[in-house]
Structures are given as C-alpha cells and as structure tokens.
Image (tube, rainbow, N blue to C red; front, side, top):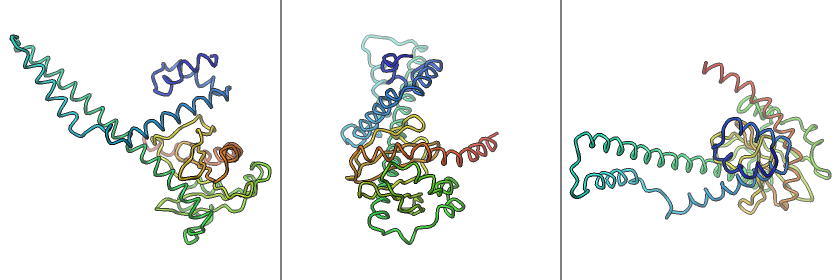
Length: 288
C-alpha cells in the first residue's frame, strides 16, 4: 500500500468500514510509515474535537422524545394517505416498518448517549491528570496522598510498580532533562503514577492512570503519541495502552512537550504492557 492509497481510505479505516483484509494492509503500512501514522493521529484528533464540540452544543443534542416522535410521525404518514384502502396484510408490513424505524431510532439515541458518556469519561480523566500536575508537582498540595510506586503496585495497580525503575527512565529522557521524583499520588479519587521532571527550567509531569478502552479518546497506533492539545492552559500529549492512559503535561511549548512524550513512550508502554498482559490472560481464562 502506498501513502496515497492510505490517505484515500483513512477515514473509512477510522470508521471501521473496511474489509478485514484491507484493515490488515493498512496496519502493515502504518507499521512502516511514520508520516501516515501522524496523519492518522491528526484525523483522530480532529474527529475527537468535532465530536466534543457537537456534544457540548445544546442546540444539536438529540432530545429524549426523538424515538416517540419518529414513531408517531411514521404511523400518521402510513395511515393517513387519502383515497387508499390498505389491505389487512399491509398493516403487518407497516407495523414491521414502524418497529424497525423505532428500533433504529432507539439504537441511534443509545449510541449517541454512549458516545457522550465515553467522551465525558476521557475529558474527566484528562482534567484529573492535568490537575494532578498542577496540584502535586507545582503546588505540592497532594503530599498526604503520596506513596511509593512499589506500594501502589501492590495495593492499586501492578503497572505502577514497573514504573519505579528511575534509572531506565532517566536514560531515555531527552538531553538536559532531569528526573526529580517518581511516586504515586491521588486526586479526586483517582490514583496515578506520577513522574516529575525538569526540562528547560520548567517542571513537567508524566501522569499514568487507569483508562477505559472504550473512552472516546484521540487514539493513535500503539506506541505513537496522539496529536498534542492544549488543556487548561497546559500543553498535553497522550498515548494509551490496553487499559492505561499516559499524559505528559507541562507549560513548555508544544515541541518540547512532545519531545518528552516521544522519548519516554517506548519504555513506558513496554513497562505498562508487561503488567497488563498477565491480567488480560487472567480475564480471558475466567471468561472461558
């Protein structure tokens, strides 16, 4: 597959509209083409922003009475055609059509509501991670909640214990960056792994938290960074594993913030996935 071929079907790929074989071709191409991975991440981010704006606009929200109104209108249109005698058997078809239409209406509303919940969950996680950077790394207000990453790994999330290898992390940081602290802290009921670094005289945070895989997040290919964005006056870069989200938050410019994210993402993804794999295997065994 060529880059031009990928760009023609990228939106269909994001919408899960391609055949399985074509999906495999796309994945193989993305594995070897960083430019197209960036293109895909940008398109995902754009969709995420459009969906968020749509969901936040009251005039565009689907009312709860949507399905009832649709059913009534279809019934009236089917039964009020002047001069037409409808055979009894036709009522069966009309009823079936109405049932299908109502079912589709319910499905559309439920999918819309589910999308709203998932988008809200991701926005809430992003807000908490960003606030954790401010409250803990900058203002030191969360000291009472701080525990070691090894303890957090035993009590809360085994992935956090793997993140305690500060020597390996310091080795992958960009030149001039200094690792200041690595711990686990809690904000608004969420327990995070929190790595604090200093880069270009600015404090930056790497915040790792549990994430629902269904969250409507600006997703990227594994190991890639989603398109950066500005949140609550901070620069934020993020990437995800199966059940965790990693945020790099700072007041640095976008380029420097992304430099940190790109430097640490391969190591952090490896460490987190090493903890997730036994859990996924355990869940699979239970389901069987």
